[in-house]
Length: 149
Image (tube, rainbow, N blue to C red; front, side, top):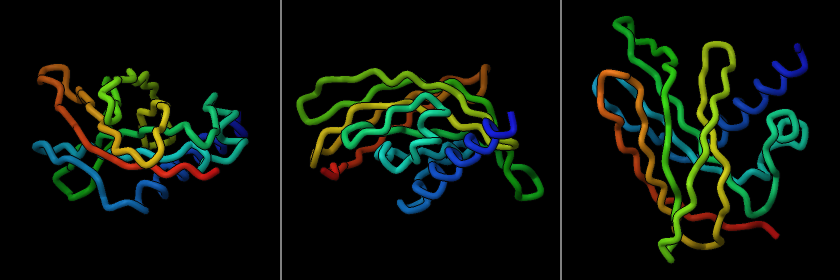
């Protein structure tokens, strides 16, 4: 159990550090921050990928979404969310994203693997529901990937 927690923490740390390498990407909706990033799965260590049943490959990516609610004291807290969506390239062919949730201490991440297309802008169209009583929030972004061979 302890090893699983350590590997989960390593996954979260890897995703967070990689997301920080890009400009801070988040949408602010009321008191909620919807953070998002997409990375090449080869950034994950083999141990982390295996423990979280993720495929490491030069042409596989991982999209990560987390939702945080801003508190009155200025801090934020993780919020469980439902995330759905798809990714498409220039051809318009859509790949559905199958998100699963990873909990790590006070953090909650929603991750989904996808197939990367080299040197092609990939359009991510997500629907994030962080409040059962509100409509899902659309989160869309385009990112280009270069595949190391």
